[in-house]
Image 1: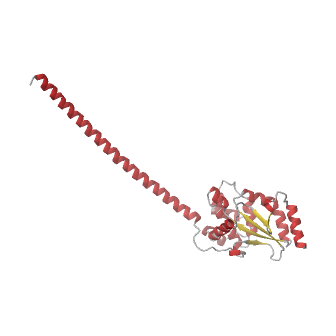
Image 2: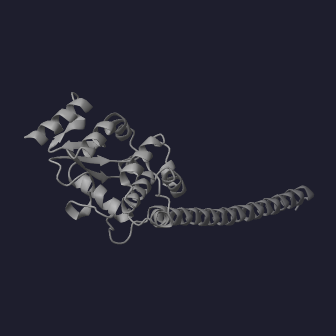
Image 3: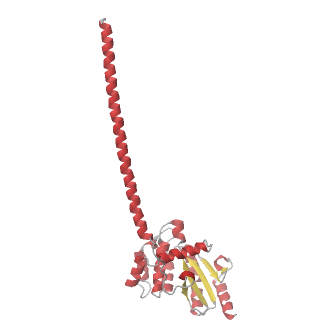
Length: 259
């Protein structure tokens, strides 16, 4: 074998050895990347699971409505889902389905409240309030639920009407879930004489009437209602009547009481 042939074969073997070393190094890097990626995926999955678990715990704490529905004191109607305001002997009954986060409900209150209070005080009108959580369902959050529970707690204390009005007077913007904070609801109770008591605070913080509010909202849906406020005078939805005014409502109620 010539010297040149031996050199060619030696060089070929050396190149082959170098190539094999390169392949081994590449294989090690590939395996390291696979292991590293697997570790990252496992850690990421663990982090996601941890976040979901933490958020799940927070949500359960905020909106947990397990347990029997506890109606507020004096609640009437089917399943005790209505909070009555006014004298039982009034000939006219106004049925109001409302959500304390609902801006249209606040607008209705601002326009009709003086007339409603006047007719109630005169013994001509009885109002049955049904509390729902429409905005919570549409926008998320729990302000509708929390405020409704607090209003039911105020009913227990005989202060529903006053607190009801305070909630609307201090209603946050629709997208601001400020009423989800029990501390805010208790702070607003300070605007009603004699309402901010240990019993009221416990009722609010414990969510005593949460399940009752959920049951009321279910009744709202089962009745085929889709918007708040829904305001019925007898069987007539006066809120849907574009010609309705406070003065016209007063005339209707007075006429019914004279008949």
